[in-house]
Image (cartoon, rainbow over all chains, first blue to last red; front, top):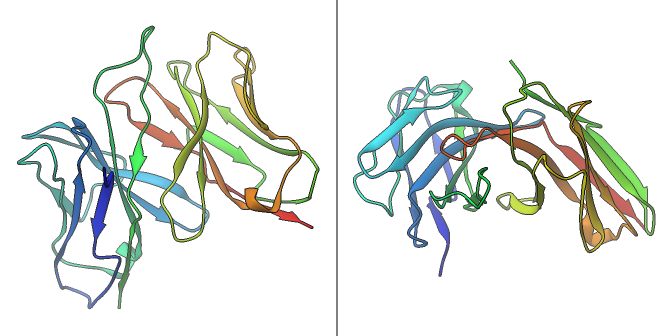
Length: 118
Length: 112
């Protein structure tokens, strides 16, 4: 299994350009997530999905859009890139069933995409 | 609003020493507390996790101590090694869609 893969690894955008960050997982996980990581700020949840066709906003969704047409893929779209979107973006996935007694399951992260907006 | 506070921001420990990273949370609905380890240029990976029905969990050199009444939990790395040098994130989860709220991270450097 490749796990969670992300493309591209690096990208430089000009202000106002758009792009799509790709994320694919081969673990048949129902739950998928997009985070951004800024220095000293930890990881902030942008959007998440609990299954194909179902997405919802996280903590910092403004300026981003997502879609989930298949279980495997969860692309993140930036429509009008701004310098504030300069960050490292991580995609993650997890199983949907919980362990006995409730609680969460492990999130598996991709290697990240480093995006710079100039 | 930050719901998981992590300290210190950075930590330097000598080889063989004990590394201690602390986290505090506010939301009593959190029911799962993982620690993630991240090496430069890589994505975070689960290191160890605990649920609130136990006060301690140990896996090798890594131990989580959990204090439910104080709403605090900590990661202890015994016999710290240079290979442990990484950024460590605590997190908490409410059980809804397995979403995680992360702390701000601790950069650990283990010196020879």
